[in-house]
Length: 306
Image 1: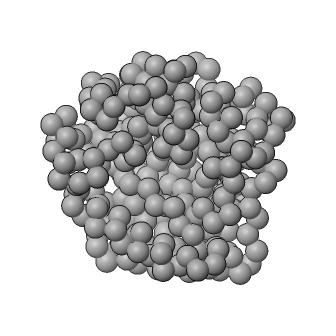
Image 2: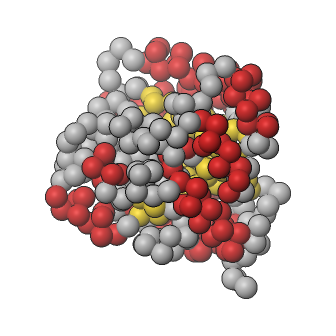
């Protein structure tokens, strides 16, 4: 029996999965035509309790909730891209957040995932690492003030703002995460731990977990293929090229480079409660979604005990 088994509680940690195993929501060409109904049915078949939102989901919350309820799934989170660091986008960002908080309320969910996409290069066909934005002091101030404002909006409605450091954005490497955490209120801005994006950026997901475990309220658990990371960095690949070539995979894949057991232990030490969401932005033509979903779920069962 693994020493870490049972350290996280099944009463307080729920396993979700994202539809990025079935299609890509950023690059619509990464798609083999799997419909919404098949996607969520396979999520349930693999043994997950919830899922994040994808672009093929029904737009009406009542329709979406009915489809998820039918499969005993709950909503783990929607995503909002913020644009606090570029001109004339503050109010539009606030309105987008309000709409998603309304959606969360209708769906009976609590976690709003955000990332600052002002000047982001991950959607572009350019070298990802070489061209990522570097925020100046004024942009950092606009970002942190904006995040605290929407964090307050979330708190007022009994919800949580969870910030997602993301490849190709201005909050990417470990120093960016440090600055964001030091510059924002722990009561207003929580941290989303995305193990794959941190590792791809050259950060140590375990060190981030140990440093900020009490602020981690949401997890995207994914692995990286080290040789693909090295090639992506060495050859200046775009984010899309990196995804198409398999930079990410799920926990439990023997091709993955990360050891999650110390991360689970650090999360247990921090008394983590919330969604642990499997994510692997993969090409479904190369990585059969149901196979990888079951692989990840079996890994969680073996290592955590449920």
